[in-house]
Length: 404
Image (cartoon, rainbow, N blue to C red; front, top):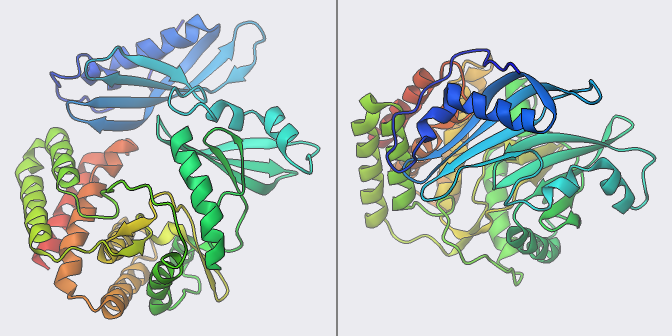
């Protein structure tokens, strides 16, 4: 049995509440995954970390990309294996799609089972995983004859029930929304394919863009249409719909663990954001998207559609605007050839949101700092080769947003 990581990965500082957690990104994690595969009759040839989810003192989950061969058949396979360390619990290890918190994922990833449950039944079906976050969610694409026919989103059964009920009520709004229209298993929801291309793709390709005021108006329309229907809100106060002190401090703590030299500056951003939030008037009487940014907007001619309504509910409309603006700032400073177009569009969109919400740009700016602080660890999460510099750049942008 032989398994080697193809490149060096960061080693986490020791975390006294997560015994052995720091070693998961090092050789110990690779060896444990190789042993896991070996016990299942697979000969591992490559094992490398591909994704990390970390909360200091609470949990660490590392997804490993692998390449192996079945000893019995000689068939090549590439399972994704997750190693998880949680405070006060035994370590867990599983291979996609057998996620312990997503019981519907295995069914959603089973092409034969899904094919039997679809009507009309397709002659064949190919399942393509698109995104996966351990214990939280997965997104799959279903293709027939090379064409996408459906998407599946897999969440916990409780979340799935909420989203199904939400979808049933939101159909009455008349808006173009990505709503579930069925399920294949508990928490495994089916979504139709909506026409259009993402605003992100249009920005990157310098394509035709919707007027910024039209995008800002979409968020406004979402509130007015949704508030008119009896919608079953989850009742949970989300750090995506409200500026949350715990979320800000948690993001600063992650930054301090990963980049100790930026710990103080991250802490100052968190403290300043919390102070601004305490002084601001409460803003939770509007219906907001909860995770609004350029990849959640589909453009089809004059028509705009919204995706990913998992966090929809009462919240702060300026936080939606700040999330959109922060994502565009990161996209525009990522080295994309269309950077000038993206950053210009961002400024126009900021002005459109402030005008429509009758808001002071300074009130938008400190919320942008909050969003940038939350997004700072993104390059580490996907283990970008240059993650320390990219993460430091995001923390610097968060500080600048406060000064703005």
